[in-house]
Length: 81
Image (cartoon, rainbow, N blue to C red; front, side, top):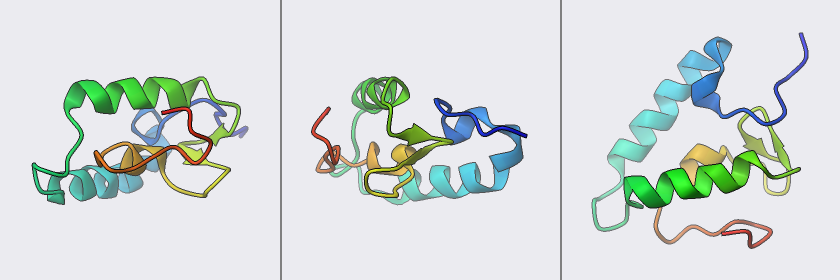
């Protein structure tokens, strides 16, 4: 099975266990440190059009983009957001 290059973990049924981890990690962030839902989705939209995204992972830094995008203070490793 070919990996989805421009998919987020939340869109891949076979990664449901990892997505639960992503959701828990985002929920544990203090509200003062958490990116707003609007900013979070905006960042993920940028990631989904990035050539470095592969199956929810950034190949520039190795992170799950859905976790990196969740924190206000996080930055894209190639400065796209």
